[in-house]
Amino acid sequence: MQHIHFDTLIIGSGLAGFTLALNLAQHKKIVIITKQSLLDSASSRAQGGIASVLSKHDSFAKHVQDTLTAGAGLCDKAMVEHIVSNGPQAIQWLIDQGVLFTRDKSSDTGFHLTQEGGHGMRRVIHTSDATGKAVQQTLSDKVIKHPNITVLEHHIAVDLITSDKFTSKLCTQNKRCLGAYVLDKQNDKVHTITADNTVLASGGASKVYLYTTNPDTATGDGIAMGWRAGCRVANMEFIQFHPTCLYHPHAKSFLISEAVRGEGGVLKLPNGQRFMSQHDKRTELAPRDVVARAIDFEMKKHGLDCVYLDISHKSADFIKQHFPNIYSKCLDYGMDITKQPIPVVPAAHYTCGGILTDINGKTDLNNLYAIGETAHTGLHGANRLASNSLLECIVFGQMAAKDILNQPSVSLTKIPEWDESRVTDADEEIVIAHNWDELRRFMWSYVGIVRTTKRLQRAQRRIELLREEIDEYYTNFRVTSDLLELRNLVDTADLIIKCALQRDESRGLHFSQDYPNTLPKAEDTVI
Image (cartoon, rainbow, N blue to C red):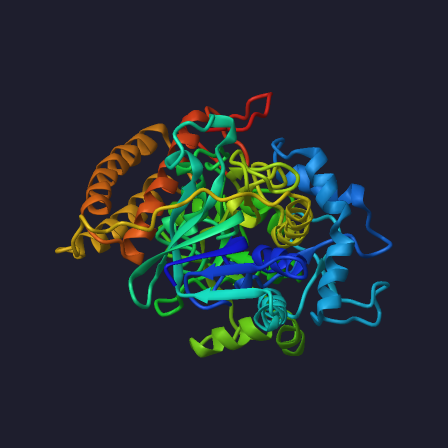
């Protein structure tokens, strides 16, 4: 496979990409490329569930208000109302696909709904404590079997192909995306995949930080590629740090679900003292940014490596029924959460900003869409409300599919194959590993939960040096997966820092010690 054409190219295999593919496949030839296996995505790791108005005691207005409150003035209200109002049909679509959500005969919905931080009602539908895994497994079975969907595992996009690179006479407004150059990681060959429409659904960029709940694949690829292709990017300073990641030397990025606090879990210092009441009247059910900053404050104040999340006051049967995977995973590390608290630390979790899109997922570039965590739709504002992200994936996957089906077919420009005739194999790949480690450490130290202008400026200077080295590598050596991910991480980190330096206030997930107050007018940071 050197050059191949599809109707739609989807970069990423999370819930947004799966939803789009299954809604298009009856009419279009689809290819999904994914860096690892098909199920290796942040969506598969989602534990809590999907927020939607399902109970007669709830309402769209309440869900909208909770989302707006969490978003700290930066949500697009019309977009929030659109996504929330489409929630029930999105959940029904998943049920129709065969997803088995946890049942509760005593509920007016027939399903068990949980309550998470920032929600005023129980409205999070789930499959035990492994919702993402259940949803993704169900949809992946359909994706694999569909005759119109081709899946290319262990493939990473090098860059988008845009028409302006090959047709100099084209006006700027007619510039469009033609597909992508894609590296097959198993044989190190770069292939050309063209498509009538290309969709960035590659997730977020939390791997830019030293500690994250995300899989290794979350390197900001879609955001960086869209930015390099000329798309506007917004609100990248708002990186959500999940308050409770399991703290254990052998536990890599294991998330302790928001639902543990929703079902009565409390945060404690090592001496057993609770502390959330000193930070917010909502205590453990405050939004994630508040809880993460509170934990960060207490850890720094007392010189702690972690704090503790305790749900052992609940019955053992309750814990095992509601959190079987968390119980099992902690037991693997010698911790019985029915008898002892869980050591936790905050970790980078969700990218609230991303590539600007319209209500159909369209970007600034013709024939290019962005959906899921890669996109900035206006839903999340300055802080994402828990379990709204999977809902956004489904609704935007469906909206983008409808829009793509209404697009006319396009004639393709002749595209040259990838040319590596003037490059050689890298002679010192250890430099890439060192740069990767350096980047993630200074981003954690300087662009983390609490920021200062001086820290941001220090990080920016280091970014400039790293970019010089990476550009030299990219120009002179054959591309590798590690090099491509590092290049994307540096671009994404640069966008986070640039956005953070432009915000002279503290709002939502962005807290600056130099600007602790919130400005009266909320404005997006658009680059």
